[in-house]
Length: 115
Image (tube, rainbow, N blue to C red; front, top):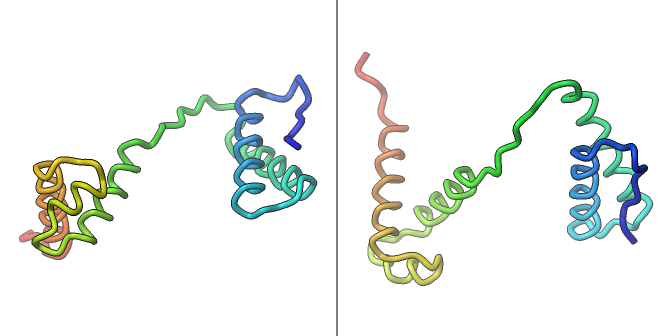
């Protein structure tokens, strides 16, 4: 089964409802009716909160990459550049760049400013 919406329902909200429905049925294994009700409640909440304005929704690629980079840094052990490169389908040079950037950010976050 899938979510069926009225033809007059706003397209963007319909996309939100469909995405929520797919996630609820796939990840939480909800049956059709509770998933459909929850998906519509999510879309309606978005309409009440965001309706009337023009909102740009970013794809979030930078955010996803930062999650990946933090994951790589968390797995880094000092001598496993090649293993991480294979695991993430990146070059060793790119792994070194990610580790260096994350290390510097980590150090900066722990050090207080001078002024």
